Image (cartoon, rainbow over all chains, first blue to last red; front, top):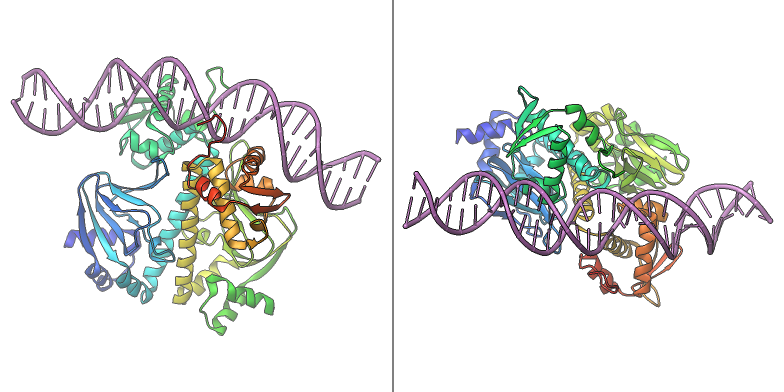
Length: 237
Length: 237
DNA sequence: CGCCACATTGAAGGCAGTCAAAGGTGGTGG
DNA sequence: CCACCACCTTTGACTGCCTTCAATGTGGCG
């Protein structure tokens, strides 16, 4: 009960609210649990509510006609998702599936809309959250459309190294938080291609790869590749 | 003055507001005019306000390191844009440029944030608008990542035919509202490729192309291609 | 008439996806 | 403890979609 409230208060969606307001919000939330690999909702499902992740990882993704997958976002604890499904469209526009054992808070649409109508601060928080999503998607479009896979990988590595990297002997050290298959899908590619890019970066001594552990040896090199200037060692380009 | 107010009231952002509220909003707006091809803001510019299009067309787009362009959206009259730049990030995340002679209303950030704080209905409208943008971007990501150019073109033609098509003798008739270069950029490709796709669709007698005028001869064919099932007439696939 | 931007078509090449197979890794149960 | 299996990862060969480069066609406008 009380851990729930703590996560709630730390979620940007509910920041700046009074204790009584937080309790009110908590009172309409339903805790749901999923095992690894369970479907939380499907594209086209009637949108009956939205979610806040309490623990575990969830992927939100689209599928193509022939089964290829594009991950839109991997939801970490304290993040909310599917908020936008409450407004406008009446169905979820994508799939959501747990990547690990997962615990979420579920907020039924009707009751939450009631709350938001009477709570200006909650409205503003919601606006802030939607704006953040928007920014992420603009970034994603930019990457998919204007950058090659190497640049996308480099940018991703830089982002994670900033977010959760520690300074080690050889360089910045961190762990990939998802499998390489999931990472490939998030970057709009497939594991084989991702593997080849890692190989190239390794050969150029820009990174070291040990399973899920990554060591950034040459941050500037990564930044250059990330910016879109294709790296030329081979005969190509 | 009064035409301004009419456009305001028809914009979803300002629907359901009282006359006095509308007047208040109008009072902080500044009318700006642009000639064809003028830059309205650049990526990275400090975001000092957002816009509502009164007349003309505006493209919002990203640029790659080597100058390639991806149009995120073409803004039609009554639409607002750059709202999200007011919240969270302090800079515009993309470029905006007029495609025609254009007239916009500009809402300075500070004054507008003051209004929104005291106006729950305006907040809700803003949430609705942001949600719509989100949905559009999810669609765009899906198209760029999971569909080939033919499918994107087909989907675009279907969308426009629904939005502004008229039933003609041979099929649904409409006009492309932008040049083929701009259309290509919106669809994440280049004019040569777009031209080739039009040729293929023409050869299959799915559409007829006469300059900017398009006639859809076989809607079902378009829908099939749009869904991602690649069309096979040649030896490929 | 000639300029210029837009549009179309052809030829060639590259990036990345598909198919296939081998090498790793972790978990489970005998 | 180790053998087995499933799944992830890596590597290689090949294919294809789309871009690039280049040239020609076309339509509006000074």
